[in-house]
Image 1: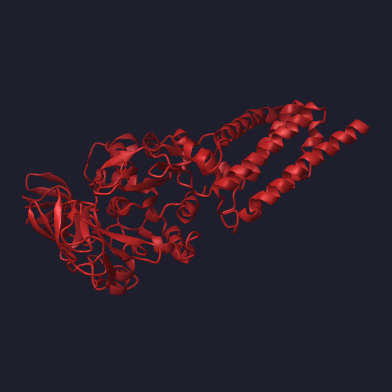
Image 2: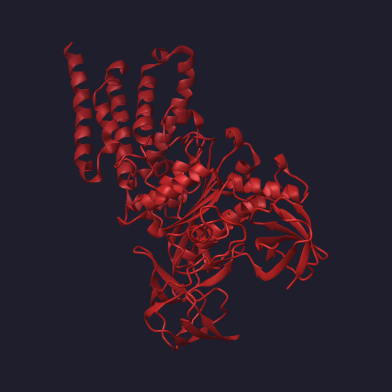
Length: 592
C-alpha cells in the first residue's frame, strides 16, 4: 500500500510523491479528511490524482494513501428507489449523517448493511453453476424481483457445496459456498464491480425489438431499439430534460437508470421531486419502484461527473445480466465532456478541437458501446438489453461542435431538438427533417407482426409529404399560398394535419402523454387517408379552398385525446365523416 505526500494542487487534480506501487485508476484517500480520489497518471513515484470532492484547503504536504482497489460500485438488493451521488453514495443516508450540506470525506455504504431481505434459494446443494447463474431471488421492490447471481469473477464450472435456506438476511451474510477451480468461495447477496470495465456477456445480438416510448414522433418516425443508442442534442429550453423524463416514465424498459450529469441544480431538483411522485403506468405503483437515480449537479466537483456516467452504466449492466431490459438516461453528456476538458487542462495535456482532450471520441465510444442486447452469462439461455439515451447540450445549439459530432458518429438515432419549433410551442420540438434512425430495417419485422405490415409504407409516405411541405414553404414565403397550384395547396394541408395532429403531443395530458403503437398507426393512417381522399376530390373537380375547409379536420385534431378503448368507434366515425362531407361538397357542385 503506497503512502505519499501532496506536492501540487490544481483544482480537482493533485500530484503526490512517494506513490511507487500505486496502479492506474486505483482509489486513494487524500488529506486528513480522507477525500476520495483516483489515480489517472503515473510517472516514477509521482501519481496524478483526480479528486471526487472539493479540494479547497488541501495543501502540499498532506498525506495520500492508496486503497489497493479501483473505483467500484456495490451491486445487490437496495439499488432500486435509491438516489445516489456520482460515486454511489446514497444521498438520503449522507443527509442523515451530515445534515443538508454534505461534508467532505463522508463515507457511507452504498447498500444498507443492516436491512434484511427475504431470500429464496433457486440453486440446490450439489448443483453445477457458472458465472451468471441464479442462486436465489429477493423481492427488491413490489415490481422488481432481484436475482442473486454467481459473480462474473468465478471462472469455469463450480459446485454448490452449501446454500442457505429461505429466510431474511442482510447483504453481507453468507448465502452460499462454491467449490471453484481456485478453492472454496463464500458468496453474499452483494458483490463489487469496477465501473470502468464492462460486465461480461456471452454474445451481443442485433437490436431488433423497438423500445416503445409512447411518443409518436419517436416510435413511428425515428425509433430506437432495445439495446440501442440515441442522442438528443438541442439548445437551452428546447426540451431535452422533459423528453428524457417522458422516456423514463413511459418507455417499456423494465428498469430505469437516470443519470443527472452536471445539470443545473433547479432542473435536478425538479427531477428528484417529481420522480418519486410519478405513478408507473404499467403497475400502478410509484415509478421509483423500478428506478435508480444518480444526481450530480453543475455545482458539484467536476471529477465526480466522470464517475457518474460510469456508475450509472455499471448499474444498468447489472440488471441487464438478470435478463431485464434497462434504459439509461444520461443528462447531459456535454457536461461530462466539459469535466474531461477541465481535468485535461489541469493535466496540461495537448488540447484537441475547441480545447477538448484528444481522447474525447474514444471515451464517448467506450460509454455508448456498453449498450446492447446481449445473451447473458449463465447456463440457461437468457437475454437482456441496455439502451442508452444521451442528451447533448451544444453551446448556442451549434450541432457542429465536437461533442455533438462525436456522439453522432457513435449513436444510431439522432433526435434533433429545434429551438424554432419550441418557440412555436410545437412539442416534442424534434425536427423531422434533420432527425434520423438507423434501426428502421432492424425493427420493421416487429412492427409488421405486432401492428401492421403497412407501417413502413405509411411512414415513408408521411415523411415524403413532410419533405414536400418543406420545399413548398420556400415558394409560399416568396409568392404566398394562393399562388400555388391546387394540388400543392392540398399537399400543404395534408402535411399540416400530420404535423399538428400527429407529431405534436401533450406531455401533461392524461391521454395524450402516452400513445400506444396501435393508436399511432391508426392515427397516421387516418391522417394519410384524409389526404388521399382530398386528392381524389380534387381530381373530381372540387377546388382546393373548399377541400381544406371541411369540418372533419377538427375531429382528426381531437383524435389524440381519445382513449384506446374508444378508438375504433371514433375511427369509423371520422372515416365516415370524411366520405360524407367530401361527397356533399361534390354533390352540391354538380347541382350548381
